[in-house]
Length: 464
Image (tube, rainbow, N blue to C red):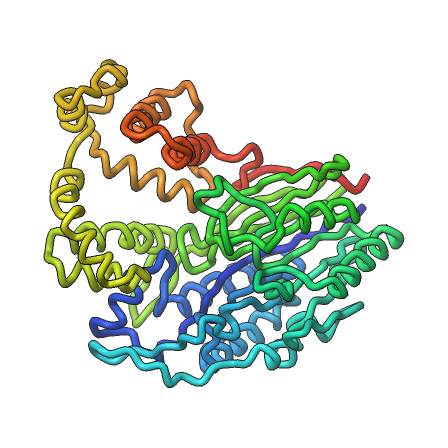
């Protein structure tokens, strides 16, 4: 079997600078998101340049290509896609942000937000992006929304199954029955023709890292039923986006059929991943790369450093606002979707806590917890080992690990892991319930990482 090299990217959320890149309203919107906003054009240019110069045979884009369906965002992004296509084929699927599913398009001027931005209708997207997959389709299915799923061959051996999962007819992401029958037919056909089939869709089929992070609308509706049906039909690999996390999980149906799912993070948020895949007799080799530098408003930045700081800013901005005053704090939480009355109430609680936690070291925190009667739950030697490290530095590192798939991993027996989990035991001691236990499980998984590392691993060949 000849090797086939592919590059997957997800969640570009391209934002046109014509919609505003300064003023208080823009700052609140930009500062309330893990991914970048105005900088997306520069980051995408850098990524496309790196991909064009690389050795992959095709580029596969996993949906949410526009910020929120704004027509100008689609038009500007398509020009970039045409430039990339001069170097290699591009296969794209769209998702809910590409037709403004929340009906909330925005532009920003000073302190004001305007919602008069023309958007792209869902039924227009297939024809608008026809040159990026549908035109080369071997088979195509049109959904009730006017979007489409399709199959295409890349090289001699690989076939891609590009699935639009925007709606299952029950108010959730997924597929209606006639769509699913077409999918099963395509899986069967690929098997009969000896093709190495790789699926791609936007929403997750299973919880990644932990349900605390990827529950609810992050996954398709009836996720276990959908994943089982795909696995039992014979699909073994699915690439998804949406969660903005980097992770690989493996699902096994009740009939014993496995399905690997590779969750690709947002290109314009930390860690700005480009997931390079080599398909061969050995299996599916995965390596995550990142754009080197990008240019924004005349200045050049290191991409990885920039998106890291931007993501951390999501936390820092809220902490700083709790200190600066109620108005700033309330505005920032409202920008995150928290109702204003609840944001005001949270300010009363958050201000004294943030003042203490923001700069406290492990040693200082340990002393305080000892006074409160929690000292017996900690290993004194570990607290001494990390006494000068700030508690928030641990929090930042865990937050980044959740996003990057564990570029830095900590074994369960390590001092770092044990120290963090000592602190994570405190919420359970205060109130032992499903949530506090789940919170500890989530942090433990983030620290140790998934069995298969999206930053570099080889998934076994399940089609042999």
